[in-house]
Length: 77
Image (tube, rainbow, N blue to C red; front, side, top):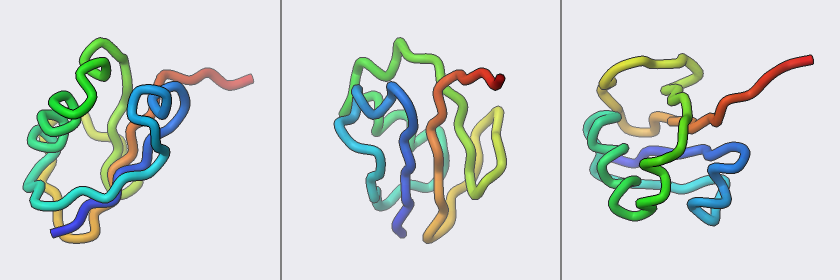
């Protein structure tokens, strides 16, 4: 199962990429665990997670070809 991960703003500085493809992830808790292991500095960053264009607040099941976005805080003007 493949998951497309989109990374925005200053979070790209932590990961070195704006997009990643990850495999064998069943839910967003597992995704966060993998990301924190690979990029420990993400643990201290504040960001919102969206799955398939919907902002989530808790653990969410991922399916094949899900798109997950990590979005730092932003303001409009």
